[in-house]
Image 1 (cartoon, rainbow, N blue to C red):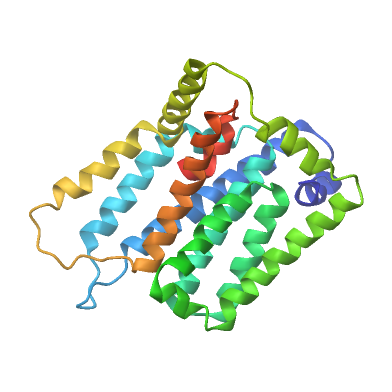
Image 2 (image 1 turned 180 degrees about the vertical axis):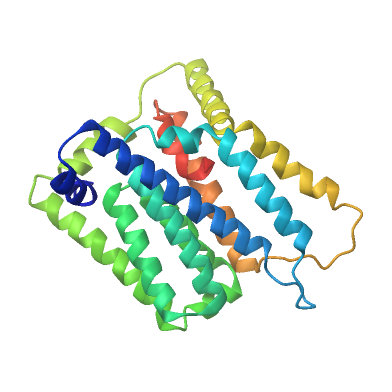
Length: 274
């Protein structure tokens, strides 16, 4: 991720505070992108063309609580690591991608592809979340209809170009990334069944802790509060909601399954947790 750090170091010098400035700025941007996404989704109109103002206010209040209590978000800003860069561009790509789905804008599709390509360039594991969101296009009719347009294909082409550069670089350097990931992160370990199950339980606990204690309360609170209200509140399209669900769930399930075969790093859970 030196490509992002280089202009700051060139101007301000190679100092610890410069690293903190960049990582803190990336975390701030991640917060802004996630908040904008949540507010945009809450402010969608219902079938009568109306916006539920109470839902928007609840989302705004909930974001404030969640951002203050989520260890994943404010903890990410303490370090300048690949995860900080990946999370910023994954969040941006998710925000732009949902906007592209709703508006069909070619410019938004190109920006989505660029953001997700940068996320992949920062950390290869971003491919898990990119593929999970893209899978929604194949699972619902409205998604397959989107594939008749040029926008999604151009976004995919940008991402594939970044992946091709990654493969080309590895081919010229002894496949170092593939050997590292295969040996250090994917190779199964010979552990007792009890140890494997214990790791899986720890992964589940870590996901809950990283998400923040407020997340579970905010997840349940609107449903209980709105249980007696009439239908017709703002709803997501099936494609958008499925894409968000797969984006969160599939990589988390993959990491949970991997924990049954070997040790995993808890920072892998950050995108799904956030």
